[in-house]
Image (cartoon, rainbow, N blue to C red):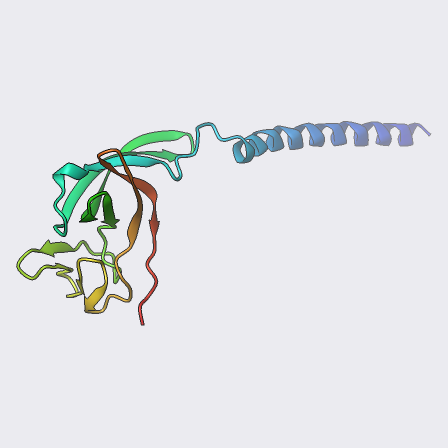
Length: 163
């Protein structure tokens, strides 16, 4: 009878210790997954350009600063976009990477088109592929106009291939 009582005692002690360790690991893990230490930055807009400084139909490379949240670490990061004012209070912001292999493209004023020098992709003013290996139009940032400023969101809308 005494050996069964001792066995029961050890089983109870080991089960209790295992439960304490399990809860000790589960509570921080659950808090990490369910309660974020900082507010999520997804979908927030930042000022990118003043509309009065843009010309209709003339692209402008804009460098803007946004706050990046990575877990509990917050940092400032500079980002770039090509902004085209289509008409007053209507602008589009293109991601600065070519849709072929992610190279940086530039605006060729003489040709009136965006050109990727690495693989010779060519894009029109509205981001459509004119020539080259690029499989789809330029990707765009989510934008909105607020007062006299163009606001750029954190998300990039992937363009669908044209056929």
